[in-house]
Amino acid sequence: MLSVLPIIHGIGAMALVTTAYGFIQRSNLSRWMRHTIVGAIFGASAGYSMLDPIVLSTGIVLETHNLLIAFAAFFTGPIGAAIAILVTGAVRMTMDTVVAVTDVTSIASAAIIGLLWSAPALRPKDIEVKHFVFMGLQMSLPLAAVFLVPVLNQQEGLLTVFIGLTGFNVLAACAFGTFLARERRLAKRERALQESVDHDFLTTVLNRGGFFRKYDEVKDHHSDTGGAVLLIDLDRFKNINDTFGHSVGDDVLKTAAEAMKRVVRKGDMLARIGGEEFAVYLPSATEQEAGRIADRIREAITASVCIPTEPDMRITASVGGYHFRTREQPNLAEALNIADQRLYKAKFMGRNRTIMQEQNAGPRLAA
Image (cartoon, rainbow, N blue to C red):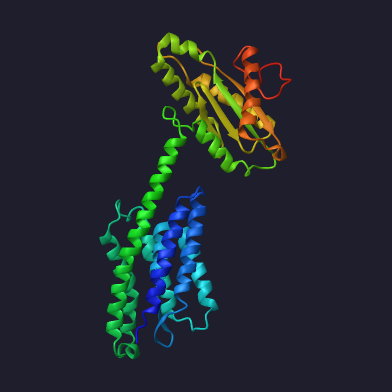
């Protein structure tokens, strides 16, 4: 007799997974970390659904975990699929059952189906209910293998079980998939909104609020070399606005930002924190490295930024920097305040220079 308990367990697991998926997708974790955690949750839920399986005969076990495995692959890609399979496999190994060929093929086929649907070349631009119907039918195909085994093919009610499980796969795929897709859309929309809030509209780099928020997220992930905060100010920018107009000034800011983007390293943070003032956070840099990066930024700005009507006019920048050891990690306001004092000194000493220490008396030479 076909018990409804596994189906109830499966539905309950799917509801919990949907809630957890939405929560994690809205978190500030990195993409790979989100996929790893979600994959583990999918795998644990799939393993839980295996604890009360539908047994057709000795060694033939049909469970409701296929959807969880397939959707782990579809919504989190190879990372989530691998984690889900490992967790599910670990649960299977702890169970007092014979691992049948159908167990292996059902898990593998479900993961493959999910990965195929997640492939960029095959993934629908806008996922719809009909796509989940097809996915549910595809996940039911391995069940048809029992009809190829003569002994099992003669079991009474086998066709009814097959039709029932196929119907469940389709309905569950539609319901579960629709909820997960909705959570993913909402999470993407929220992340996009947060990105727009955190970034400067003109230059597309972080704004002041985004800079502070991102700093708080990553400030504890620095290396033993310490870190640095640089404050960059375009020299005599007010004169550019007054002489050539704000549209030219905006172009200067955008070009300067693009020049700085080419200099900063992966993992560094660049922001426009006000007017013609930019800031850079270097989470891993010695004082000498920070100074060299500051000088390259100044050189990149001078080489890239110009006034179209005054091609011989040089645009320069001044930089004040503050380097700190790992154990001296400051809050960002304090670091910017120290860097600002050194920036003011660079301006006072003639502009177009970098000052990283109070005792600096002249411009650094770029490496």
